[in-house]
Length: 220
Image (cartoon, rainbow, N blue to C red):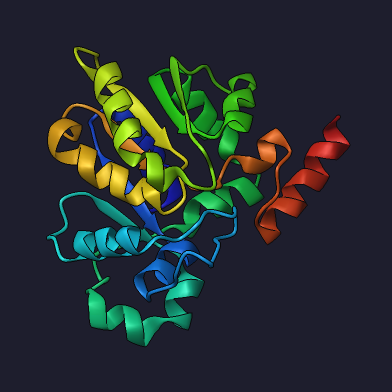
């Protein structure tokens, strides 16, 4: 799937769900403990590691995205866990941001009801697209609040029309989307958006974010 196909899926308003497996998820799968952090300083927990493993034991019912460089680095270990031949390339969204094409996604989101499950600093994304509801999370320890977050999602989505749910919750996002899919996956779209939008609110936790921030600064 390329970026155009991804946008077409959003435009169609036919529900789909996707989760991403990148550095933090791979480290969790391979048994990192609570003293380890992901790029956005999210903590790892043994229970989260178990939950991520369980996701991979299920058949593919929604879209899985894999960051290509990380797959090459951990290929032997990943291949022992799961067949990734049917997975998609997550870098299409990073490249869309690097190539200054995320505005197309923002424009599509403007035509949808949007629920955000994000840290507080991402509230400012409303300058790029309107969202209908915001569930604030602790970016560093959201795993501990997973059940509360999921209950808030249920409370909001009850009796709601088609909604795009964007989740930025580190490795916990994978589990949240997986938990919500059986209940709401046929009516709403769930996207693990990872750190894609961070530079647009002046936060950098990935190397490629710095380039985007430099360009944004020139526009100010």
